[in-house]
Image (cartoon, rainbow, N blue to C red; front, side, top):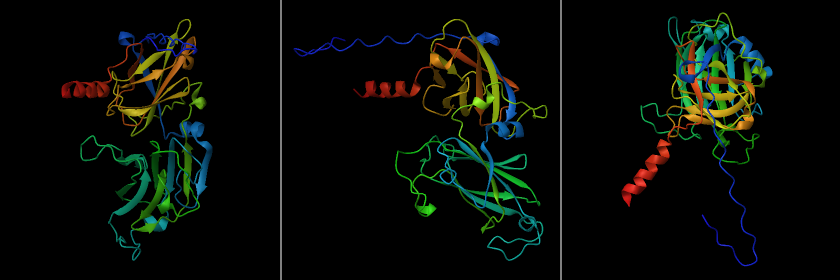
Length: 333
């Protein structure tokens, strides 16, 4: 479009040309890039490589603010004491029990929560409305989750909490009571039968700002089950011939549902099949290099396949959300 220029003013600079896009086919069917299962997020080799600052012991539950962590995920691990697991425990709180009764663990957390008892996934709470709709729960709303567990002495409970973003840039005063904090993240409370858990917690911070620790590959395990009960890493590679160009990572062809994508250790962002936007992520040329390039997905939901495809392509999926808005606008005029 032509620009009006006032007398004595220099004309505006020309708009830069749109970047060129390229297809980068893999070795899979139809040029797909095959990603193979490597390891569960909770496997010891993975946590050993990723746990920022190593495992930390804290006397009580700690939010991400307590841990000085601003993004990513945090894994909380708790081992129940002999007294907490004893069926003969009586008179402690409203939920005191006798032999054969179940225990109720109540937690408060933000934003996405996955809980395991040992190797079994016990619960998962995610922002889409649990009643079956697509309405998103406000990120400022904490989740209260009641779990019925059969406890044994030394039994481990893992709680993975993912920070899904904040509402704005505001000052957070962590010296005031937690109940007054604005938009806190992580684990804020945990009780057993209405009584505070007595043991210490082990905490692993997983900021996921990059996967530099995996630059030589995701540490796999020969004991890794065919289907991980929860988040797992999938890894593949694609060859780039000559100077790299921009492209798109498309995930609509595989079983992918929700997770985080990485190219050469760089965090591309989250993907979600339920999001009202195209199911792909933009890959700038400077994230790629000539030769072999690593593609890694951290898929949060269980996937039955040992390998599954993605595509690196210049063709982007239509923006159905924008198209829907445009159609509504056209219809109303």
